Image (tube, rainbow, N blue to C red; front, side):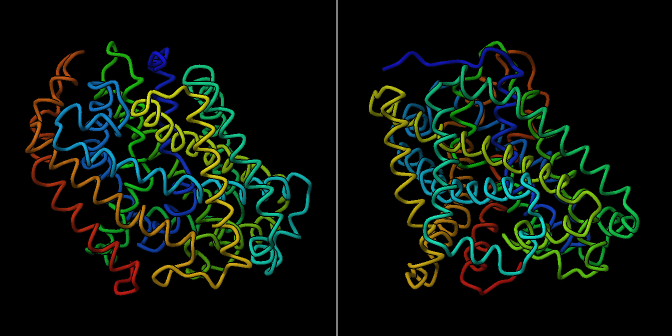
Length: 450
C-alpha cells in the first residue's frame, strides 16, 4: 500500500475541502431555494443551520478522518468493528453520485464552450438544452472530456493534483463570483430582485423552509458523502480542526450567497419579477440563464465567465467525489493510486453513458418510476445522505462517544464549542436529520412538495 499523503499546508486543505463543498448545489440549487422561500428568510435559516448542524457534522467527519488516517470504507471499522458497515454505506454515496455528477459537469463544459465561442443566442433557444441532452453522441463526448480531466487530477495525487489545482481554482472562483455579482446588482432594474433576495419575508418561515435549508446544507457542504472523512485523513495533526471547519463553512456559504446575489436579481429583471422564472433544476442554469445573458449588454462575455465559474465549481467537486472512492479502494484493497483511479474512471464512464442515454434512446427505461440519472440522484441525495448523516451522529454520540472526537479536536488547543457539540451530535442533529430523511423520500415520490 502507498504511504498516505498529507496536505502540505492548512491553506491547501481548506481550499480543497471548500472546493469539494462548493459545487453545482451552490450555484443553482441554493439561489432557487432562496428565491422560493422569500430570500432573506431562507438565508437567515440557512446561515443558522450552517453554523450549528453544518459545523457539528463537518468537525465530526474531519476528526474521524484525521484520527484514523483512513477513508470511510475502513475508518468506521477501525473505530468500532461492529460498525464497519456504516463505512461501506457512506462509500456507496460517492459511488452513486460520481457518474451522473460528471455527466452534468459535461453539460457545463459544453455550455462554457458555447458561450466562449460567442453562441449565446444559440444557447438561449428554447429547444437547445433538450435537443442537446437527448442526442446520443454529443453529450457523451463532453462527459468524457470532463471525467478524463477529473481522472488526471486524481491520478496525480493529493499534493500535485488536488491541492495544487485547488490553490488555483478556488481563488479564481471567488474572484469570478464577486465580479459577476457586482456586475449583476449594478444593472438597471436589479434593485427589485436584490430586495426580494435579501429582505426576509417572515410569512415564508415554516417547517418547509427549515427542511429545504437543512436538505440544502447536506447537498452544498459535501456532508455524509465520505468526502470530508477522506480529506480529513490527509489533514495534518498540527492543524486545528475547529478553525478549519469554520473557514470551510464561511467559504462555502459565501459562494452560495454570492451565487444568489448574481442569479436571483438577473433572472428577476429578465422575467419582469416573475417568480416562476426561478424554477428548480437544470432549467434555471441551462435554459433560463442563457436567455438572461442573451438579453444583457456583453452577454456573451458574462455568460462565458459564468459557465467557466460553474465549471471550476463542478470540477473541484467531482475531484473530491472521485477521491473518496479511490482512497477507499486504496485503503481496503491495498491498491496503487493509478490502478484504483483507472477502475473508478471506467465504472464512472460506463454508468455515466447509461445516464446520458437515459435522456435519449433509453428514455423509456424507468426504475421505480425514475429515469436512470434521477434514480441515482434520489437514492444518493434523498435517502443515503440523510441516513448516513443520522447514523454517523448516533455512532459518535452513543457508540464511540463524543470524547473520541473531542480528544482529536483538542490535539491543537481547546475545543470552544465542546458542550454545544455534545448536545447537537447526540440529540438535536439525529432527530432533525431523520426529519430530512422522511421529507426527502416523500418528496421523491411526489407525496410532499418543498
